[in-house]
Image (cartoon, one colour):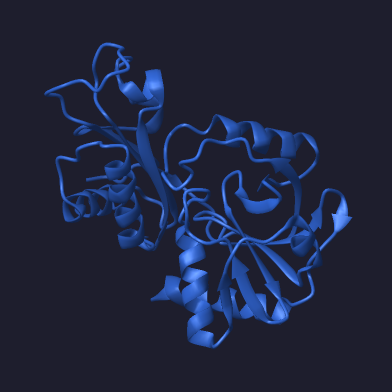
Length: 279
């Protein structure tokens, strides 16, 4: 079978992305009633697939979406789909919505959840040494640990950052840094890696998890605690991490120079990531 340039899947139907049709009564359309994941594909292999599947099933459980398949079944399907796309490097996205049913706030009964997947070519690993960010008030709801489709505050913050000539926005809640609009925020200070603890105020990022593991393997001290914007400004490094952008060094916060003082440690963490990809 000839491989496709890109691919979309919806409940068993496979088409190019621009040809996929999804019912208007899908609750993701009305309510954003669903959860999602995104992963990178290298050499037609999904990077950190198990981490993404674990988070997917945790998110679904927290909003009480019943999944009619196992992690193994989802993983096998995703692996089969990315093998149908011709590019070695791909951006893989998938989401589960509660059901297709007439609009009603209450959960519909006796209906199955919907699985939507797409995969498209991706240029490969993206790491930057010149990220600029702004800080914004974190006005999101109190379930940021769920990877929900409801992302309007994140969208507005990301747009504000772009209009300010920046790459990302950093949320601040009650005087403490939480995370970015689409990434985790960590700092390095005096040789220690510091990142917000896992609670309901941040997403449990896969790259955050990996960097903590890399630090442990390298003997780098770690602290999982909240930090203030002032601590962030005084840090030796500020690292923004996400699935598609695993290690972005911040050079400017709110128009002021910041970070960029410990490239050696950042280089070690990046080397660990690249070794993971090759494995």
